[in-house]
Image: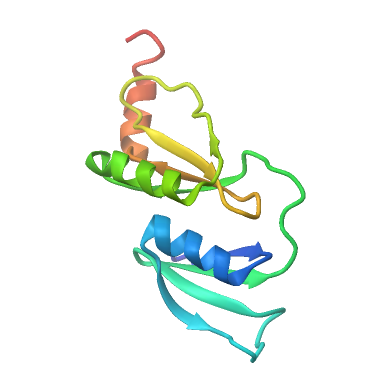
Length: 137
């Protein structure tokens, strides 16, 4: 039986720059750094974002940007705080997709290795309930 997501790994060209990205925007807590020891494929660091284990490993950046992304839930009242954090780091924003009222707000932005992230204020139940209403609201 699947219990949930164990961890998410991102391959990054610069562990320190990626660490700054995760700690500055997400308040990630660094819980491990391999240093000179390598237990996996390459040097790595582990973080906690909320209760989610995030790993970063040294390697080549993604060659291109896509819409594949990881979305983290944030409270709507903190939306502008997170926007300011992303802006302060100087990473590229992706324009949000069109939305209907009631499904939440999102910030989309790329890290330094072409991974796309989303900060989203809505929940699955809010989105499904809104979609039941259709496009005419």
